[in-house]
Image 1 (cartoon, rainbow, N blue to C red):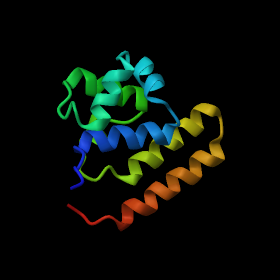
Image 2: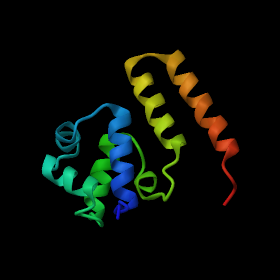
Image 3: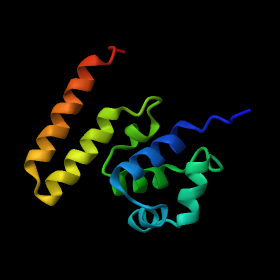
Length: 111
């Protein structure tokens, strides 16, 4: 039987991969050990402390809420990509990512 990963585990991995970071690079950026990142992503640390979530969110360029959302919004990933594009100075790519995020947001059901 396949085990379902906790929401935080899926989201950390998704955002990390979207940014093209290794677990070691994310750990360095967040100030935690790569092994800790691995444990969170594998679900062995299903409920990380708030300070760890804040550090991960900051390193990933997302909010803590984005890490805790049941459906991590592709929107959040697109917005993180747009932010990265802006930081690199690629305004056109950032516009495309933000338009895509806006389009997905319109299709999501209101809660």
